[in-house]
Length: 128
Image (cartoon, rainbow, N blue to C red):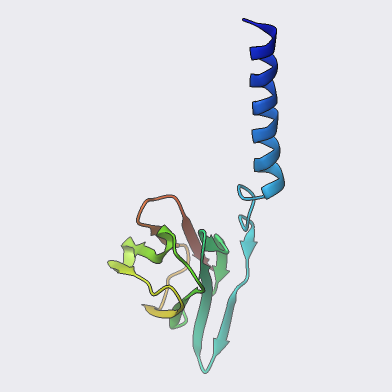
């Protein structure tokens, strides 16, 4: 292989790795997050949809009537097309606003999983 070609390939690999690491996209909101609040006996879990779902992993209490709030703000990607298989829920969300989804009373150990239409973005809510 020509020396110039080798240098170009190695430079491209290093640049790609740097972009991935410094953009933080592969590490964004993967840690378990507490994004729920209980008000008037109802638990509300809030997830933002834009360039994926944030946070991607949440923890909430089981055994309490619960509603999931999906917020969008100038969202124009596939995270607008939300599917939650366990709820038989599938909808294209508005580009700006909130969608409130009644998920009933969750059971401990039964996570709620959501995914975009392309399968690129997902989120999970674990109930304890």
